[in-house]
Image (cartoon, rainbow, N blue to C red; front, top):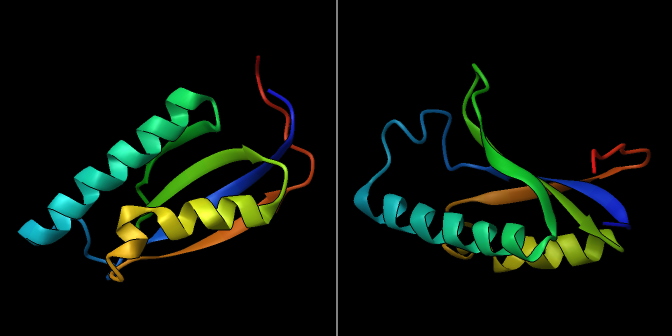
Length: 100
């Protein structure tokens, strides 16, 4: 892989998520997982998954892309974000070292 790396942070609707996820939220998360799994399988994503932050779980993906706008487009298309229950942030990793 070659390119720039960015952190995609998926922000859940509340700090108690996913422990108290509704059936609808669980269905959205299944779609979200499939979406990011496909990006991972295509080689666009270095790593992804939930982060067990003591203040509340959130989602992480490290994405390889040319620009942050590309990552923002992936975020906008994320089923979790499209559900309007989740939001996201994108951060550049100016000097990422990635194991080959």
